[in-house]
Image 1 (cartoon, rainbow, N blue to C red):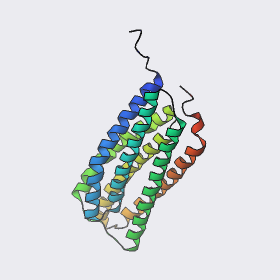
Image 2 (spheres, rainbow, N blue to C red):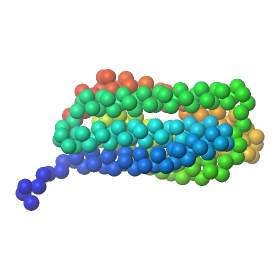
Image 3 (cartoon, helix red, strand yellow):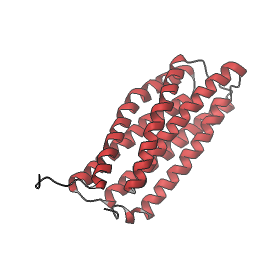
Image 4 (spheres, rainbow, N blue to C red):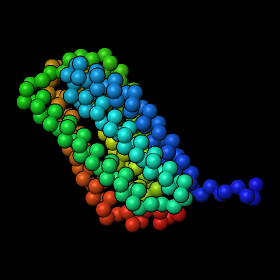
Amino acid sequence: MRNMPVMTCRDRHLSEAIRWCALSVAWAMIVGVAALVAGFAAGVIALVGFGADSIVDGSASAVLVWRFRHERSTRRASDLVERRAARVVGAVLVVIGLYVSVSAVAALAGHSEPERSTAGVVLSAASILVLSVLARAKLRLAGLLSSPALRGDGVLSLAGAALATVTLASLVLTAAFGWWWSDAVAALAIALVLLREGGRVLASSQRELGGVGADR
């Protein structure tokens, strides 16, 4: 027993972060693809944006699994690895924000009305719950690990939950009141949040990484 390595508080947080990010990858690969297919079929921009956000969120989470495994195996924090992960996540936020905003503007200009989508309703409802849980866990651990990259990934999951909520609401509003524009307007609001957060994560990767691992 005396020869067993002692697991520090940070080690436990690293293991927990790896588990949550791995769950995020699995969820994104299954639901993200299904949401993209359903979104394109029904012409629901928010659902397409949600699907794209989910897939890229899963990719960002995969990068973070690598980042935290690297630290756990070497038993030391790496500013360089954190910086690279933060840059990937920040760039992903900006790209998704631009895609969703352009799609929303095009839908408004073309008076594009989303069709009813049972699959969209089911995926959106499930994602509101699952992604909210994932986002909360990631944001909590981001603070404990002083990781801007994980915080950005948590924002991606939160944006996915928001987009799922927007999608569900827009389908209901369009069906009940004929508000064809609600989907695009709500998606545009989410896109602006993604762009702002992406810029913040990219900036933080340049100036705030000196303190990563200071609490070890």
